[in-house]
Length: 94
Image (spheres, rainbow, N blue to C red):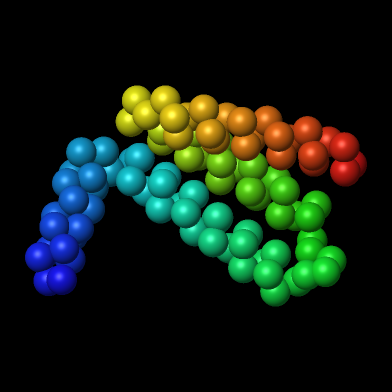
């Protein structure tokens, strides 16, 4: 178990060293994702979607950029699709 933690921390350090800006963008996008999920869970059955949708879309766009910079096609395709779907949902809601 200790070896797994050491390997994970080394991987995080290497990711930080390879591209600090991307690391920070991904960390912020992760915080946005968790924040939106917690807000949804706490405020159901009537979450503040007009606030959450743009924030969520921003986080997905940040992840899309990070995926592009990592040359990760699968993640890029996923986040571009999420941005597209949620943007249509936001426009329909307005």
